[in-house]
Length: 211
Image 1 (cartoon, rainbow, N blue to C red):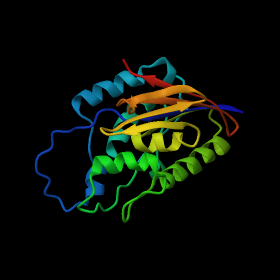
Image 2 (image 1 turned 30 degrees about the horizontal axis):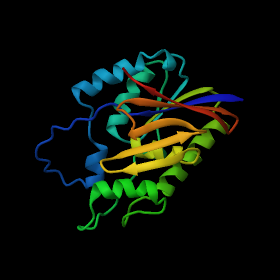
Image 3 (image 1 turned 45 degrees about the horizontal axis):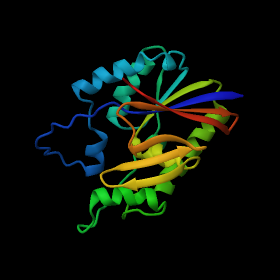
């Protein structure tokens, strides 16, 4: 059975934070980050795309910004399902000597690289792959939207795609069957990777940007 999976990067998150005097860990603080005002507007614009008009099932990560993006796609037509299988890559505990941007790039080059209590590229890809395969097997719906994050989407795509280049500042180039999907960039926020499957066999990937 042919099915379409839309892997959607969440809309623009709020950056104007001051003091945060909660006792939350850095991980939980990241999970709680909300969309900016511009992000809310772009999430609505995303939901108006003809590509998403026939979505039958909506999933998202456990992060507030993906849930806030997903609500526009669901638009009271369908329920929003939440799974930590679609969470952003967990960084874990950085060593004080580690350059974070360099680490971000090196995780694309080394699928096993990770911090203490963190996840590698391979770890993230495996949890997405397991959940997406489950949805392809078990879901009766043919068009499924998954609102998730930049790095975890790109890590998952490396199951099928070729990494051509990865460099600072956070620029990668990947291709699928000789077709460049992203060149010296990352996924826009928001944007879509459209994956078409026949059963669990991938047929094509298309990158869809929002004007």
